[in-house]
Length: 140
Length: 175
Image 1: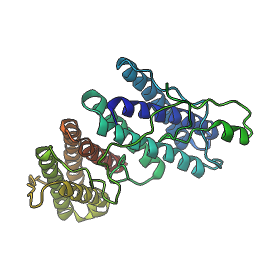
Image 2 (image 1 turned 180 degrees about the vertical axis):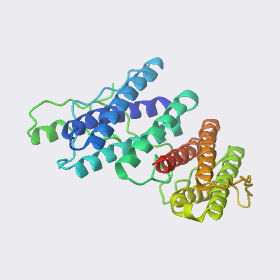
Image 3 (image 1 turned 60 degrees about the vertical axis):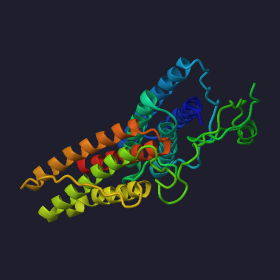
Image 4 (image 1 turned 45 degrees about the horizontal axis):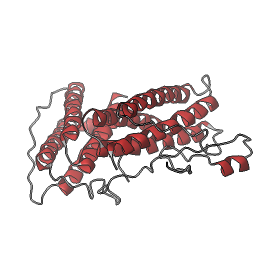
């Protein structure tokens, strides 16, 4: 995988994460589940910011950033806080793997970006899961 | 020109035209093309995240990382020894360092020895935890720096995942 392919794959994953965390945030109650709502809101903003940064990285390489799909499959059901939390955890878990892939296939500033993103994602995963992992972002 | 097709994203499945219509969502979907997210050759596929990573040509980076992790493990073990009541709180951190040490040992040439730097353990438990957290932050920064130095992509990823795992443990300790 080339660095550009890895960047495009990460951008595609960010598009999905922005969409899904937006949907999940809309299902969470700020008054009844303030912690979950706060985590989802922060996650949504973070993924939106990363999406924009990746778009710039890719454009700076002279390539066309991959566009978002119009919609993504939302798991069903996501009615309870536990279901919402599980669904959000899946998003973070998957995108953490993408950050790992980006670390693997880039160097210098782009790799540093991926390392920071993986670090942040790991904390979000732990907040949603409640327990830490040994190797978040590994290919396993 | 790459043909339009449905892709699997690492973050979510895209909703293809047929699937969306079948779900009754009632809006048209154009699925964008993109690269299939696949890791480069050499990524792990078994139970050990370091399997397949190797360290070549980063043996020196791997030795430095192994020494740093060995030092951290020794510091946690000494702290628990000096303050047994901290054993439960530090068990996760100790387990993490053991797992990381094993992962690094798997990519180092057989027989490579690690060197643990001794850390003085403060008398009070609170001070001991504070000193440990400071050392763990230093370890985290070292792992990030080593991941940036590594030329081998899968090995850089291993170091990055180790740093992220440590970040999670530091968040637990901060609770």
